[in-house]
Length: 485
Image 1 (spheres, rainbow, N blue to C red):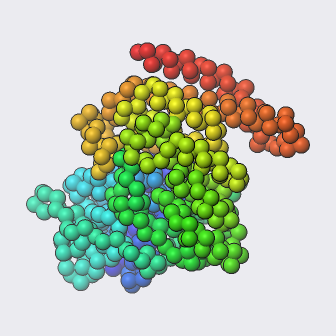
Image 2 (image 1 turned 60 degrees about the horizontal axis):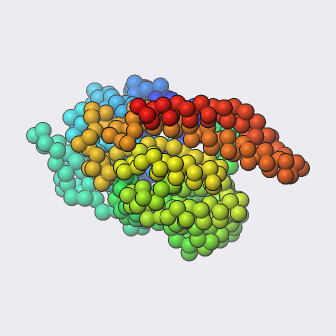
Image 3 (image 1 turned 120 degrees about the vertical axis):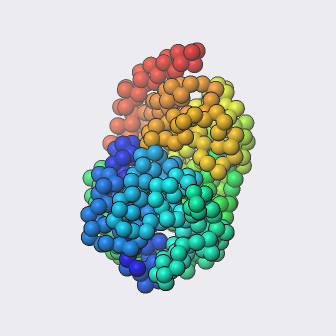
């Protein structure tokens, strides 16, 4: 069977991410391609990352003349889990183009799992639910042998006389090392390297060491792996890194695991294996606060080359974190931040405003915590209700016609919050200005304490206070006006 793979993330259709200019290859897609190739199928990729729009698929369909069009999203990248309407529209158009070219069309994505009826009505033959590689292989095997796609194959949503029917759930792989190395040889990485080097002066690639997350935050959607957490062996991860280093001149890795470093023994073995293979690595991870408050977790991470960690802080209010079922405490945030900074690790906070029950004093606690701990970066959002989460079920009666953001900079509050959507957008700007002002003042203090340590980055941060300070005062005034309306 000839299979043309593609995915529905278009960097150009997300203006914020296009400006950020940090593209990562569709890792989940490359895993599936490698598996299908190992099964003996002819696979090719139309990478939409830098495409102008869905119509760019047409030349690939003409060139490859595939039997199957597999729209297979990268489920490891958080941007695909946001189910942006720009990307959904593009996916539905690619389904149409694939059908017109005579292809059978199979879709595997978080958005298709959440909106399976919409995708099937637009012409998809099947939606893959859950972990996709094995399911897709069985779908292709059925078609290769002249059988139809039906519910005898686990992990599918199909259309039957206008109704959506689902087969039995697909069991996840317990030994992900059984999957071949992602098909990095089948994607042109030149454009990725070029954008990274032009905008940032280095090149970062993505990899995963695990699949899934065992925790149960109320707002976090898990359409692919549920509450399961499955680890690659440290040896397999290091082997993949060694292959990438041999073939590509990158300097940095983003481990895009939902949670990296859940087990201290795994991290120790990982750090040991990197040293044995003489792999000097700088990497970024996402991890939990309570894990990072433990030296036995942080120490091997630092030894392995940890440069930046994004922590799901979410709020400075214990009340709100408890409502989210985060399972962490404000004191653990302080402990983890202190431990990481002392080890020379850059610390970044994920924050969100507008969660159920959040009041003015909860917002103030979050702002106070950020200014007290002064992480190196912050990422601010408003609470986003995703289908399949307890949070979504609680607020869905309040949601209107808008149930997804248009792009990642949308920041629309899609249910009734304590304040207006305009207030939360202004709060986003205000906190960023306050944060940059505080960092600038801290840089100025460091320069005065140790003038011999002056560098360009510190000078820029300090000088930016001239802009951010007055802007923060203005945003505070505007925020107050919105609070009173």
